[in-house]
Length: 253
Figure 1: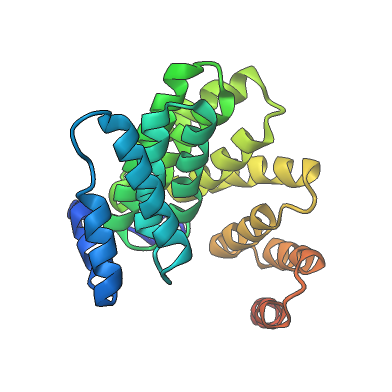
Figure 2 (figure 1 turned 60 degrees about the horizontal axis):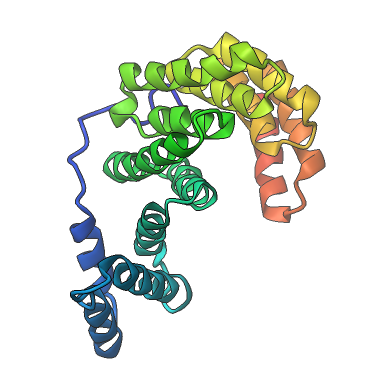
């Protein structure tokens, strides 16, 4: 369950060059030669435009030509956004990191992806300091990228998002992220309160519904857990997923 699932030793930092080398090692010779040529294609002159051209080609290659090329693609996509310095592209690239790091278990990789997201959100906020979605995204990057569930990092992220929710209690993105943050930090009652509010406004928010079920199951409130697992079935069409939910419900009854 969220509060302790990533607890353990501090993650060793990951270097982007390690990620790129590991990804390139899986390429065939012609692909590897193509990537190497692009990575060394920046020449004297308009370096920024040369970098953008190379980064766009590299991002397209890792996105379209290679299976499991997400990390290099996301990295180069982020580099493009930083060079272009467009709020729209910066937030898109940041959200790409944030949404995917939430699905990972590897602490070191989560930390690296969170760092990329933070840099991008911070640059976007320099352009538009009033963008609440970027503020929430930055806070969420601290929450989900916290090393071994580091309480200080989690609370730093929560405080960042609270600044938005206190000003606008109707911001469901803030409430949702605070609910997930509460689950991670072990503040289960607060998490339930916020996630319930989210579901009241967004009845089809399956992630919020599932998290309510999981938190209640972790707390030992089997009746509430079953209620939310049953609710989740309204929004699940995949037979395998439904089978798993029914197994979980049966185990709680």
